[in-house]
Image (cartoon, rainbow, N blue to C red; front, side, top):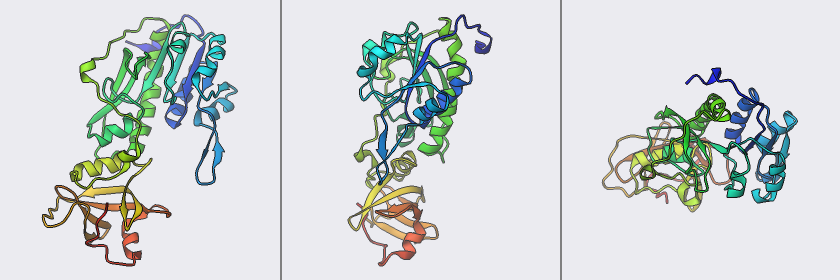
Length: 319
């Protein structure tokens, strides 16, 4: 279908709900084609060691474009105000709260969501991270109607992308945010004219990409070298994979597989020093850490850490 040639019958009242940079890219693209009556985003939060309070990326866009910005602690607190705006359509994208049924019933054309996976795969709040961590070779973006269940609504449109071997959560995030922006703009005319199709999700194909927990960040060297590398890639550039060395946190930002076998060494044991870092034994081989962050310090090349270390690293056990 040629979305660009669909004539929109009216000037819709649109409310956009989102919070992080991913949704900022989508909102900025939306504003190039449509008016947005209001945005809803998370309250201002303190960030960093200094606890500096910062606006969400969506709030920044709202201020720059003189758009009404709502920031309820709980979305139920804003139901009346949203209802009074009489929206035709609510668009959500990484908002950060589960929407109650009362909200879903407010807009005349429903609530749609821009989700960063090929639903029904990877429902949940961290689909980009899990696409890499869980070893997916492809992912994408889904435009869907919202329902009471988590990411369970009918699919309107999708677009696929292959995951490169060198993709990280950061690079994949940037690619998918652009795809989400473009797919939304292409899909919106049919939604606004009520000519779009909708496909129920196949529940037998559902997988999940839940929000990253602290346990998800911890490296387990009893896993294969491939899984270790995928975990590091999938947590780069936030929040980072970690292990411990000498009882202190050691974050790992980049690593690669060597294919070397060390049958006589223990999982987590540092195997040897390389020109670009140091090797670590996994269940079936070895990975080389090349970019790390010792506790209380900045990110650094692993070889610089090796050169400044006070003792012999080889033979130490990472936990």
